[in-house]
Length: 138
Image (tube, rainbow, N blue to C red; front, side, top):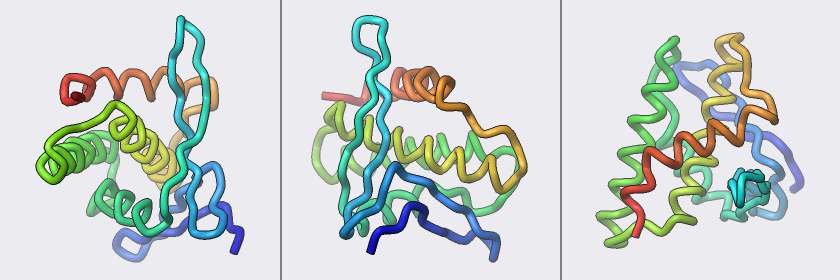
């Protein structure tokens, strides 16, 4: 099965999450990484089941204008749960979670008919979120 988008529901409302690609039970998640003042883009491959579980953890319980803060709180919880389970957080784990959170933010913006971050805005948003969680990394 080769689909591009995955659909989730909050109170019966469709939230469409758009990863880079979904192919053969693997999800390709875009990552924006600054290297020497240049943003390099790459993808992380994740099993679809793990991706779905992460997205369900990141999605807010209700659809409202405060979705960004709710996703950030859910991201904080997801990272803390990861640290509890594995005893550490690698930078690559954090980048994966931030990449997934960015996909959820874009999906929520679309549901609320708000402006979705452009491809040129995503790297700086990705970096700002990573900076918040970098102290958790081992």
